[in-house]
Amino acid sequence: HQMVRESLQNYFFISRPRRYGKSLFCSTLEHLFKGERGLFKGLYIAEETDYSFEKHPVLHFNFSLLNTSSFESFLFGFEDMIAEKAIESGIELERNLPSYMLMEFLRRSEKASVIIIDEFDSPIIDSLNDKGKLERIRSEFSSFYSVMKNTGSKVRFLFITGVTKLSNMSIFSKMNNLTDVSMRAEYASAFGYTDEELEGSFKEYIDDYLSSEGCPYEERNELLSDIREYYDGYRFSVDTDIKVYNPVSVGMFFQNGCRFNNYWEMTGVSTLAVEMAKRYSLIDLMKDRIVVGMEAFTSFDISLLSEKILRASSIYALLYYTGYLTIQDGDTDALVLGFPNKEISRTFTYSLITRYMGISSDLGSMIHGVKRAMEEGDVPAFIEKLQEYYESFPYDLLYKDKERTYQLLFHAFFVASGMDAAAEDHSLRGRADNVIRTKSHIYVCELKVDGSAEDALAQIKERKYYEKYLPLAKKKNIKLHIVGIDFSSEERNIKDFKEEILQ
Image 1 (cartoon, rainbow, N blue to C red):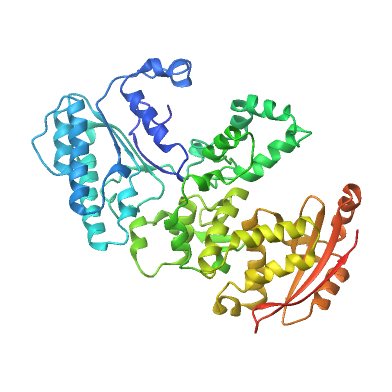
Image 2 (tube, one colour):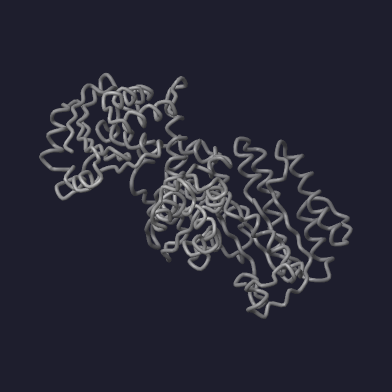
C-alpha cells in the first residue's frame, strides 16, 4: 500500500537475492492493478485502507524468459512479449522494435498503464561473455526505458526488480524519476521473514516438531536459536537493525521435518558470483570485517562485470546483491559486510575453496574424515586429513602472507564443513587461532608456521585460551583438547603437532 498509493509518483526499483519472493511480489502487484479485490479479502490493503482497486492495463514482463543465445533471438522474444500483452489488452500494434511498441501501447491505452518488470538483469548477466551482444541489448533496454520517462502521464505505476542493479549512468540514465528503495529502512523486511513472522506463521510446524518423538530440543528457544543461526541474518539497510530469514530455506526446512541443510544452494548456486569472487584473493574474502565504500553500491553496474579487471569493491558489491554477504554495520560512507548465517558461510566457502583446490581433490571426503575423527577425539586422524587439505592448494597461495594464510585456510575448512568453529576466539589473555566444538569434544588450536608445535601448545597454556571452556567441559563431561600445530612453508604441509587433554 505504501508503494501503490494514488497520490505518489510510483516508479520503484528494488534488488534482492534470488529466491526471496520477488516474482511472487510482482504477481501480487499485477492482480492488485487488475482490480481483483476478492483476492485481497481479509488483507490489510483491502480491509484497513481506502485503496480503490481501480483496474489498469498491466504490462508484466519476466525478462529471464527471453532467449539470449543471440541478439536476434533476444529481440524477437522481446517484441513477442510486448505483442502478447497488447493482445491481452485488446490493442493491435502496428510498429516493431520494443521501444516503439511500448510507446504505441501506452498512447493507445484509454487508461494509464502499469509496468512490472521482473528479473530485469537476467539478459545482461547471460550476455557478460559476449561484449558485442551485451552492448546491443543494453542499447535496446535504454531506448525501452526512456519511453517510460517520456510518456510519464501514461504510466500509473512502474516496478522493476532483479538480483543486481544498474547504475543511473547506464540503461536507467534517462529515468531520473526511478526511486531505488533497495536499502531503504522501510523496505528492509519487505522480502524474507522477520522473527515475528517466523514464530507466528510457522507456529504449528514448530509445535509439532517439538512434540515429536526423537526431537533433540528440550526448549523452544533452543530450536529457534538454531534456526536463527542457520537461516536468519540478512540485513538490507544500515538505518535499521531489522534482519530477515531466507524464505525458501525456511520453507524447505519445515517441509523436510526440521532438518538443517543448505536448501538455498539446492535451488541453484550463483555461479556468476563465485566465479567473479575467484578473481580476487581467497584470503581477503575470508576476512571477518569487509569494509566497502558506499560508492561501490551507488555506482554498481552488473554489465561492467564483463571487464577483465575488476576492483575488489565491485566483487564485494556483487556478493552482497547475490546474497552471499550482508550488512553487518556501516554508515552513509561505507558498509561493513559479512556472511549472514551458517547456511551461506558454508555454501559460499565450500564453493570457493573447491575452485582453488586441485582437480583431483575431494573436499567432501576430507570434511567427512575430519568430522569423524574430531567426533571420536582422534587428533592424529584429524591432522592426517587436514594434511591432505593443505596439499591440495597451489604453492603460490600458501606462500603469501604465511601464518595468516594458513590460519584463514584452517578456519575456511571448518566453515565449509558446517562444524561449530570460531576463528581468533577471544579470551581475557588473547585470542586462540581456532576453537572447534563437537557434541563430546572441544578443540582449542594454535597454529605456527616454521616454528614449533611445542611453542604453539605452550602459548595456549601460558595465555590460558582454554580457560573459558573448562566449566562447560566439566558440566557436560566434554573432553577439552589443546592442540598446537606447526606448518612448514617450504613443504606446504603440517610438520608437527602436539596435543594434551585437560578435561
